[in-house]
Length: 387
Image (cartoon, rainbow, N blue to C red):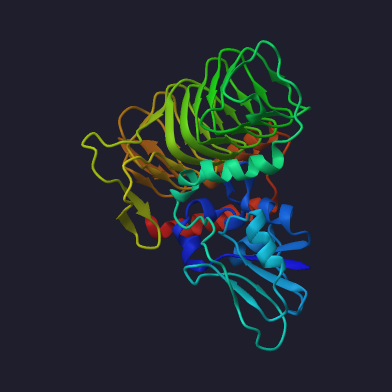
């Protein structure tokens, strides 16, 4: 089976700046990305139908659309029940959810009656959906991935069912911490470490190669993506991977892309002082829109940096390659490749940006390729519309 993860254009635009640098299905929710969830349930060759400039990195399907091709709406969260319905599709048939949204379609000729679900599966449609549904998705992922871990060290204190803690046999260090599973499971992946004095309140995922530093306070529902370092206080945060918030400071109800760094003491508000409804920047509408939320923190695009002791207003959106430093609150939307402080922002010099990104990625043994550079140059061009 050739499976094509198709990005709905309107949804992809709503999820900017996170989808500037990745297809929707490469967004992490719960323990794994959306694409990894589909591949876990339905084996096959996977392809992406996304923005053309991303196809240099994420392969698109060039073959014939026949009975061996399955289209899947990429922002849908796969689960066991949904996957069985998708696998039951015959050539020419489509699957719709309870809201009449097409979830999947099997290639082929002829007209076949559609299948209809009696429920609507979880979907990522708005930026804030990522942290809003993270707890439920993490629970689903844990049921599949959180089995047969190693016994906990006697130095670890568990509050709640111990079977709701999974420690991968290849985890590096889990000692002297407090793990509370009353509110949800705790997943600790391979080569991950949870240092002494830290407190985790589930649901929480510490993914492969990530570190929870000493004395950290991690509230659910939080995902610490692969090869990330966290410290201080986090509450309902999703970190995609390769990003650091390693020191004191608060981040809540937030999403952090890849290759980001949040400096010591930096804090982002997630609640307005007057408790009024939060508005969040929306790229396609080019304005701040109502969310219906009372809590929303920062949305941080890839390769962005926040300096020490920096402060962010409630629901601040940072594009790709933003660099904030200095005191005071910057405006709550900063276009990609901007750098500065409340005194003013300037365009990022791309040669300087690439030099920094190369050094940052090399520390994790990953190369900034010419393909990556091409994508980031295209993002810079697209960002001009928002300056």
